[in-house]
Length: 114
Image (cartoon, rainbow, N blue to C red; front, side, top):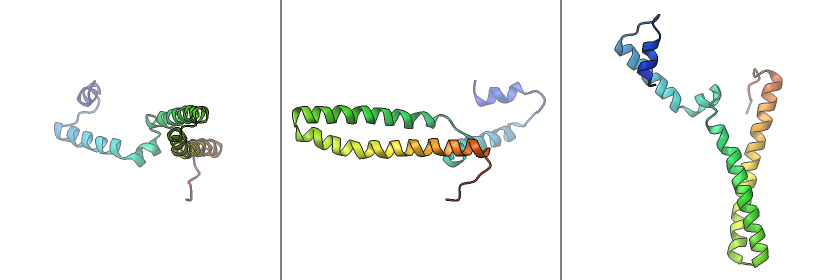
């Protein structure tokens, strides 16, 4: 179902084609605004960070074990590059969880000062 069909389903409000087009343009701009989507609770992006942390953790573990078993410098360097990235993403995931927990306790009315 596209946006035009959605508008035709609501019989109580009749918008002109020009008004429909203007409203669709506003909605498309709002969908592109990342800050607005985050504020409105866009859940599409929330899945990728945990998946990235999981995959980076598996890759880091595999590369470190294989690097230790084979003593291959290339594998050890790959681990040296992957591990800080894994820790950084895990830290972002932890910050997101703490932020959600704090927001749930305060009822969502607290605004971050930083």
